[in-house]
Image (tube, rainbow, N blue to C red; front, side, top):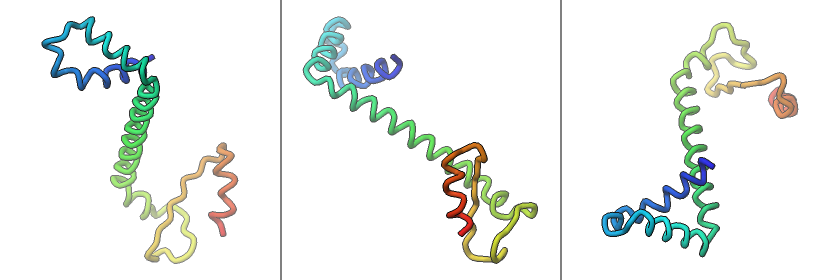
Length: 110
């Protein structure tokens, strides 16, 4: 329901300049008419919202990793495989309850 309201709001944005000359009921009629003529625009709007949310999550994760880089790469208590002074550092995040993590584990050890 929230996505539908958000997508409806997206359709109202271009009409903002005409809002002074159009009544609220007329704006609603125009939006509903546009949705009826092309229902795919609702799906497109929802997809656009989801893409923006995913991008925001990815940006936030990158910020967290960047701010904690030293702690992740130079933790004296973390086990090290290979050269501890090497040029490349691989930090492995592993969830023992995750079936995908279990599948990847043999490849990480190779």
